Length: 256
Image (cartoon, rainbow, N blue to C red):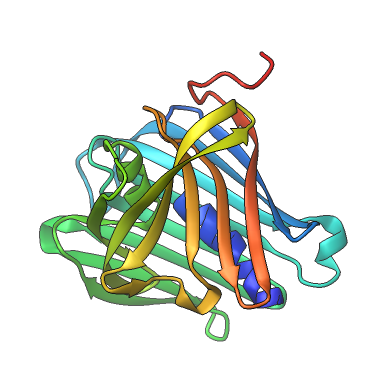
């Protein structure tokens, strides 16, 4: 059960984020009636360059923080931080890093995307050797990290029945994924009653997150496409993440 909870926390942080400058989204993640963790996502528009991408480009920086609540730390403590930097216009990957603490497990990973040479420089921290191990991973021209991919999705016009395909790269692997738009539903959200699109991330031909159940995400069916709910189906129940706070999102909160 602990590993399922961590998987859901990390998944939700990795795939839902804002597209507005200085947008901030906060989610409560629960199993049944028990609230286990929170996820916070913040964005900023920046000028970015590095040793791989020398020319400065306008970019979207996303910082996501996932952590279990204090009472749950006793069972399995999580303090994870993910940073994504992608081209503002296209959403294509420039930089992606993860700093993970999950129970007794700790890890640091960094990715630099060199699309001119179709290469991802992937660096994974070795706790034993106290240094990064570096790998070169071949990538297609149009490659997204997990956050940049969904920035791109939120910029598109989506209708029920759509299936959007894109290459994603992270943690040393690259794969072709598709985002399937299943149906429209009306939910009672922090913005009031909103029509939402229910989408699901998949590998081409199967579910990406099959080890932790299918993942469904509700995004507002408007120009902002704000994620308001996520649910993961597992054998013993389901995890649900609800949007509880939102700043600089373009929509008015209920009652304001």
